[in-house]
Length: 258
Image (cartoon, rainbow, N blue to C red; front, side, top):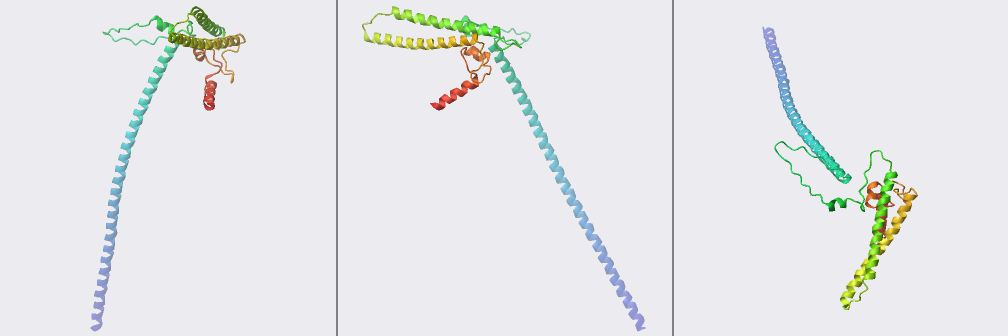
């Protein structure tokens, strides 16, 4: 009887221990399930954050693209405006009339014609109209050579006339003024006139040298580098012997020497 009681007691204790083990295993199983749930919630939160970041990035990218498009449009407008202004300036320099915009219906456009003879003569170079280059024209051809020869000869004639005029005035004004102040003003005027005539005498010599260059087919080219001086520069200064680059370098050297 005692042995049976011991066996039954052992069985009960073994059942209790197995029950405890099963409970522990269930608790262990429940714990990882909670961990998995926590991990899932963390992943969802991270996914929401990433989605928010992506939406913000997309919005910022859209804003930047809009700004870039607006900047491109503004630059295109500026370039177009500059081109139009450059074309107008080129037409004015070439003497071509600007394009007339079509008038709107119902509105009459009043154009004021204020061109005077003085404005027309200002465009002339020593009484000669400026040269208009043609497409594909050879540089320093016969027409261009004759044009600049005529300018130089007209300029020389003007200077000679000025010198002759001063000589005649000096011969006529031989009166000795009794007032010393009048005599002083006369002498200063004559000295200024003589200085200007001396400059013109040197300029006549330079014009003669350029006419010799025309005769020797060396006119219109730089003396230092041999590059074409250009029609526009020669129109402004017919006695020019240097291109713009060489002339600027010479001026810089002169300033440094001073």
